[in-house]
Length: 238
Image 1 (cartoon, rainbow, N blue to C red):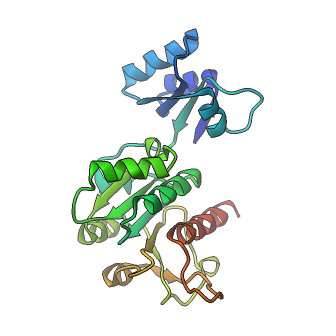
Image 2: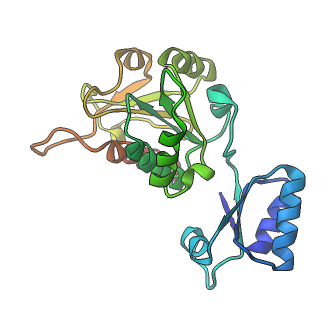
Image 3: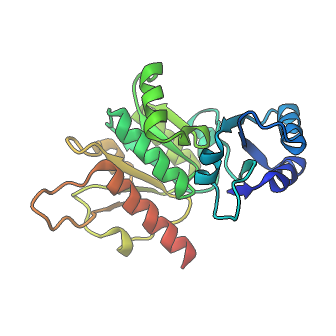
């Protein structure tokens, strides 16, 4: 999903494949200027970062890149139906209220190559809450769509999409690695206190249980989402 370096970024833009660009801030390099111009002409969002930011976010290389391009994922979508047309798994968070937890999951989902994150919500999240999500995600929300909808709307969209809904809940009878989790799966996890709502459980293609042999029978939300994403990724690469 990443094209590293200014030459690769220019190539992605000229091919119409770049969906977002990250460049070194205050860089006056001629090719970076061209990246900015082409991105503006195509309506591709341009984000800025320090040299250290780009070095940290780039795939391994000998020198910090001047630019990076996102390809293969749309960072901005028009609601859940649009998101579910994108390739790759989607993480569904039910009953999750803490911005930090959501931000951690967004970052994990982005790194794992997911298409986006859906948040069950009756109301539009507050701007201040979304800022906290962005902060906790280390800025991953710039490259990963986060959409919200009611359970009813989500269930209807899932059914229209034909994508399998895989729910992690303690009522599951099989571990994730004993279930089939295709690359287009919707992976649902719930808040530790209440779990996933019964309406989503009823709509699920499969309900899995992540083994919890310890004394405290509940993983952190991010751990549960990571377990599903890693198993989804493993089954794709096997």
